[in-house]
Image (cartoon, rainbow, N blue to C red; front, top):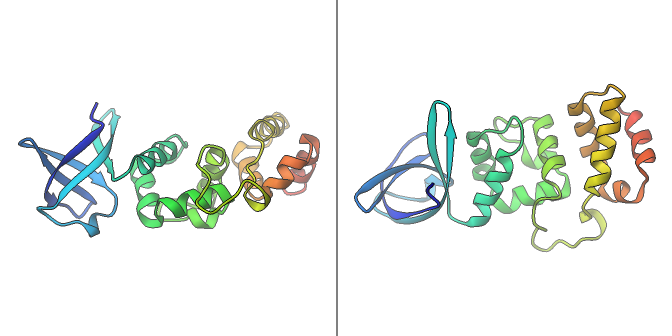
Length: 194
């Protein structure tokens, strides 16, 4: 597996991919911010190799943090590599982390990501992203108790509610409420909106 590429940009394509020449080999890589680079420029990228039944593709990022975020986005059902790259490219690393951490679904909306997908990203990654710069662990930035969230999701699914509806409504709740309330209180609150 390829983890890192360093070389000279030989070509830039309209689809957001570039060709990097490294030791006489040209590697086609889908990368963020291709508008800020030019042919002939030296570049270093951390690489994710995406293997599918019909395709092997490379996805490159200037930092390990962006690569890590990309992989976390890929772990979400319904988010593919192009969508994950689009989120990071359109919004930027810091904005995406902040939107997930603060439960801001609107902050994640880009082409290919609707409200339900944005809310799903928030619910599934909220406890997996780093604290955004300048944030604290109190007040509006408190992380929800993930075990409590999972128990509530499971209970409501057992009552016959669809997971996507539960996830959507959970994303609208304040993190402090989730942490302070009992699972029963959270379920009662959600039952008023489901």
